[in-house]
Image (cartoon, rainbow, N blue to C red; front, side, top):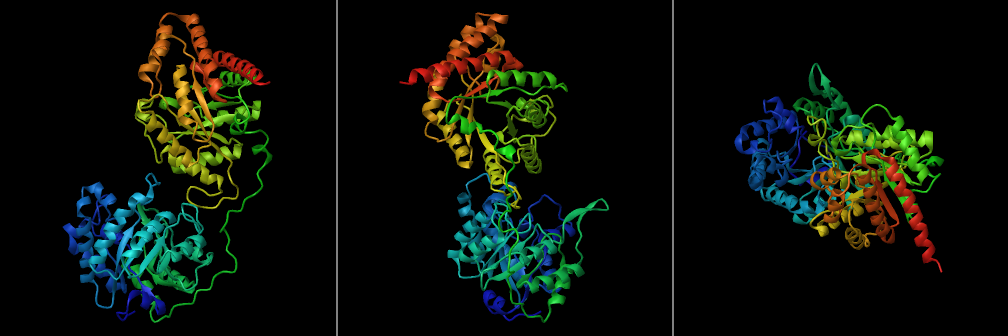
Length: 622
């Protein structure tokens, strides 16, 4: 297929255009190991990059992308190359120009800075990086910019907002979806394409992650804006293990057949992404040779544009949540740690005693202090099914990757366990299996936000779900810090992410209770103030000196020095009651932490809170 050297935008208005295939795949085939910066090869081995471009041109590609997909400051910094952004991008354009003939277009490739990671920064912080890379590519003389492999529409819109005012050259905006029909951040492709077109994208399309069949299905199920030009750069199928090696399955012949089907959907710019080779491009170019573009016809109906929500079962609505309860009166959450062995009977007995004493919910830690304990999910299910006790489960970022986290949450939903507390989790190396890995795919902020996405009926990957979850999501707050303002700022971010309530670390003096109240009264969601009775002098000293997030007052430490044994536990109860006298004046939410599974101590404190709350209420009435 030949092209005249009309402008890229003008050419695509009336013609099909074959793009190149995967740069990284070819470089790896030529001996470049995984784990290096492929973009750096523009400096150290430009001939190798040139040869890859030339192989795609010879195969029939007339649209070549520069070797700059990850040539942004964030990605290059991993290799100590952040100061060479402009140089690498300029050289990459020169190399592609040298490999291409006069009838080929060269587009400057700009990839997602998030690059598949979960968002941890404010996206606005990426503005300068997009501008820096785009200016270098534009000054080097590209025919257009291709923004590719963006999992999140919001990041792609930001990149487009930055780059569109810099040039009149065409900008191609390509999303990568983990599921057919929806972006990772929850937008349907119909909505996403509409926003990209409105934001100034000249070409809109899909690349990477999915193979030809799923990208074809995506186009079959989406409404495309009028007069939009479409692009598609699928992977060579799904990556899998073959003969002991990872490989992509799609053959060049299959890729050619798929290109014809994509043309029927109105796609005009067709290339390949991961796993594609010059052989794939040649087969595609041959199949499309001499063919004219096909006019796009949108489907009459679009399945999956909005999640299909079914009516929730009664199990989610039989009792008010702790957030609803705490708005109307004193509400008590009691923490009771799962056992460290295989016997659950004593634990369940303790839960029943706490429930009888008046606990509104019993909260179960998720392997606290990185110490292995029985699954809180299993115990929560037993509490709920056998004894009708509301569990509130901690969910740590430490132990599960994103696959495990979503699977775990889906299981909780199926069990009707909807009250959770999202925490970071203590590092695994400090627990009883120090050789185990800490996952931390996401922060607590990210996980709160993603749980809320499930509540919208959208999976972590952006796939619409048939039901909306109904999770009540709590966040942890540690007031025992030197810089309370910094801790409050962090707490505010959790509220912004979607937290419904707050549970604090235990406090051990009345002034701290008042400080928490004054510092958090503006945040607009309930706060459960943490109180944990002390059991001995050693317990007090251990908590104060060795456990992160806990700080005792000098008075508390001194009082515990004077007592031992059963008398020490009585003193611990007495001190906790004094703190509760202050706490119930400022907070409806009380969070009692049971020490060493002494459920009798927690039960006594529950009863005390109920009595004192009733007295306070009676005094307040006229």
